[in-house]
Image 1 (cartoon, rainbow, N blue to C red):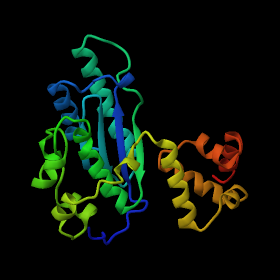
Image 2: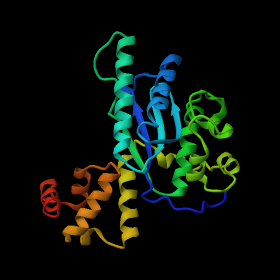
Image 3: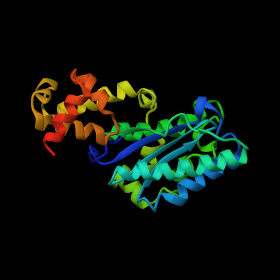
Image 4: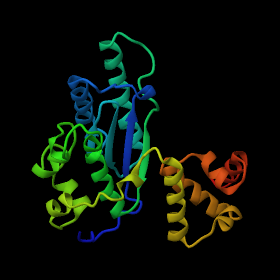
Length: 251
């Protein structure tokens, strides 16, 4: 597979997953999948979100997005999930929470992981035994890439594949390592994000811990990738209060 000519570090690619409460089948019916897809389609342009890939399964959905402002991801997902919750509860004559969490998001920080994430999302129905190959599943973006339609336009092709022959690359993305993109592996993903930051900035955790400016930059970077302050505090072996105080001193 050719190497993409571009680096995407800090470029705003996020792998999002929503899941039914207690893994319940909130998208089991055809019309439920259609409704969730319709909401994605209705709001993505309003929030200036590019949909790179998606797959709506019976009890969860994956969406890979690109945005220049990560705050729009939260706004986009909030309106989709809130609207769908109201629809789901009304049509099922129920009340209460629909989702396991608001949503989970994983920052994608290099070309290889971006391609693997696309493959991982499209392989969901294959791994679940629903279909034999990706193109047979109706509620994913696999065929959108093949036909270059719906969400997959020239802009999406450009930012993902640059000027290379995207169909050949797309059809031949390796799948041997796609398990590393399991969005439930939050601790492992956090470790990868920290390792990448240290390497990119040629700095150690001890240096970050002892320098308020570096600490602020480190915290802002990880929080922008949707990691929590308590994860950072545990990593540095300091209290959340101490980190918050240092951050507030510099703002």
